[in-house]
Length: 301
Ligand SMILES: *[C@@H]1O[C@H](CO)[C@@H](O)[C@H](O)[C@H]1NC(C)=O
Ligand SMILES: *[C@@H]1O[C@H](CO)[C@@H](O)[C@H](O)[C@H]1NC(C)=O
Ligand SMILES: *[C@@H]1O[C@H](CO)[C@@H](O)[C@H](O)[C@H]1NC(C)=O
Ligand SMILES: *[C@@H]1O[C@H](CO)[C@@H](O)[C@H](O)[C@H]1NC(C)=O
Ligand SMILES: *[C@@H]1O[C@H](CO)[C@@H](O)[C@H](O)[C@H]1NC(C)=O
Image 1 (cartoon, helix red, strand yellow):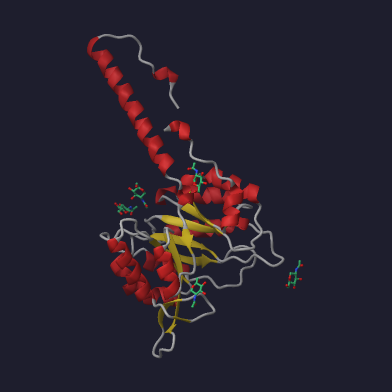
Image 2 (tube, protein in one colour; image 1 turned 180 degrees about the vertical axis):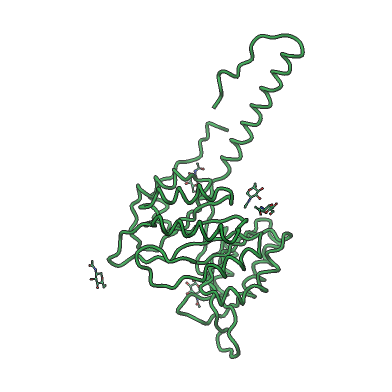
């Protein structure tokens, strides 16, 4: 917005030209920052899920999705014996035709020869899988590599008496901070569905996340995956979380499973309050469509 008080008063000589110069610089800076903001609509980022086998990885790379989300467990390549290794699979499965090592090298090869790079969100299902993955991730978390690399785990117990045990938060954060280029995606276990349709992130759950990020001196970009139906009931604490972590360029990643109960109006209010420049949206198409997010203001261009 333009400040009407900033209008130059009539003046002469060098003084006047200095004032005009200052005004022009001010206008230029305002225009540049508006442009940058307009370009930052993180909800435009698209997702493929459970990219846990060769066929689907090929399909996802051939598609126009931007981010490949995939799950890592300790297990075996189908039909092979030997000690367990990190493989692409979602519990309870423990075998796959795709190892983490092959997943990463296939994506990296694609990114080496394609102008539009694809990012990966690696969802570690156990601390063991993350520990054993360190050497495999390291070549891709070096500064020279540029494709988006997200390291994800549910590291804290979350709403609605979730029964899945979280991934050890301290070990996860210590190891993840060894990959400073990577985005840390850290969340809470959840349980919803069936007859469970209500739930909130508590102030205590949010506070614990803030405390452990501080304790581990986290100093890299962070995103918080929050489940749509629960986050929309928790606006005040989600706003607190993002405000307290703005020094980490934090964002939220709103996700939901097919069939989750979601109050669409409340979710829309949360997303617009947080802002499209701080919200990744990873929900079924049908829910995304019902949100009717406001279009870019074309009158600004
Ligand atoms: C491969 O992964 C996709 C996505 O998770 C899944 O729909 C498909 O059934 C999987 N195929 C095999 C052979 O496991
Ligand atoms: C929810 O479902 C579970 C099993 O499906 C049942 O044991 C429980 O009583 C139900 N709770 C309510 C409040 O209906
Ligand atoms: C955070 O990391 C940056 C480099 O990535 C460094 O310049 C800065 O000093 C670090 N800040 C803290 C508080 O450690
Ligand atoms: C946040 O973004 C700024 C500007 O891009 C960057 O300089 C800084 O290193 C980032 N910090 C973190 C923790 O991501
Ligand atoms: C942001 O992106 C979403 C999803 O592509 C789109 O529906 C919406 O109109 C966009 N809004 C702005 C302000 O760019």
